[in-house]
Image (cartoon, rainbow, N blue to C red; front, side, top):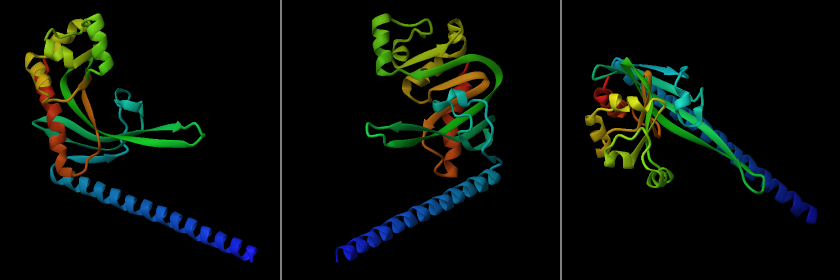
Length: 224
């Protein structure tokens, strides 16, 4: 009897495992089909609006993104917004961790990246929102050489560059005001490539011009 019960439990357990695996396979297939439909919709939108889509494109700005994953861009769409050459891309990187019991987990971090091609070269520079630690450091040690001199801006943002004297030649008063008002994203510039990113992905093709517009505004307000 005991052997029969044990055998029956093993059979039930095997059925449960098989059913779980089948659900995983179905989920993977459905997700793959949804992604393909989403990519197809992006491609159709791009063709209709004079843009073009590339999958797995090589990029030279991954080291300016979280995770610095050189193969992290899964797709990009290229076109123009207000006369400027624009790229909107999806980027991701994965982190892994192990708990005290030796169990490993991984997490994929996804971003929408916007790049705007500039007509002239700029010094390497980035604007970042201050973290709590950065605000504390400013309170203790004062402003760095890259400070703008506007208390509202310098309290909210910090600028990274190896050439502090060029900060005022790049950031116009109008751009500083837009940052204070929260109407433009944080960004970095290197040569002729202006870049920004945000968490998420392109959920609908119609979002693309709106995703690019804030960085295009930055490009318009940069001093050359």
